[in-house]
Image 1 (cartoon, helix red, strand yellow):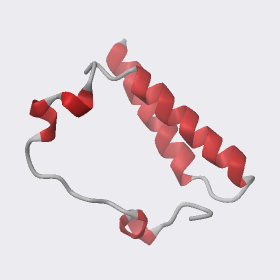
Image 2 (cartoon, helix red, strand yellow):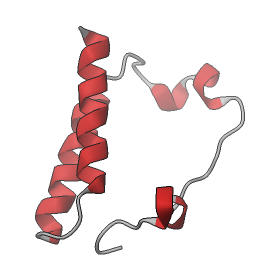
Image 3 (cartoon, rainbow, N blue to C red):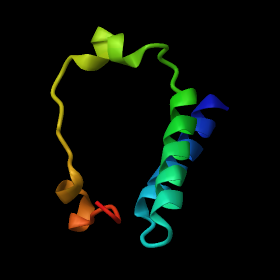
Image 4 (spheres, rainbow, N blue to C red):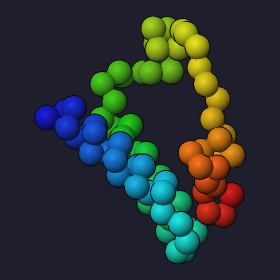
Length: 75
C-alpha cells in the first residue's frame, strides 16, 4: 500500500508540474501541497542526514533542463 500511495503522490506532483496557465498562486499552492503529500510518505525519517542517500553522483536539473525545454509558468 505504501508503494502505491507514493506512486500516486509522485504522479500528482508530476501532473501539477505539467499544468500551465491558471492562477499563479493557486498553481504554486497545488505544487506545494503535492510536495508536502509526497514528503509525508517518505520512508526515510531524515533523508538529508542519511549518508547512503547523499553519496554518489547527482545530476543538477534546473528549469531549462526539463523535458522538451519546458518551463514552469511564472518562472
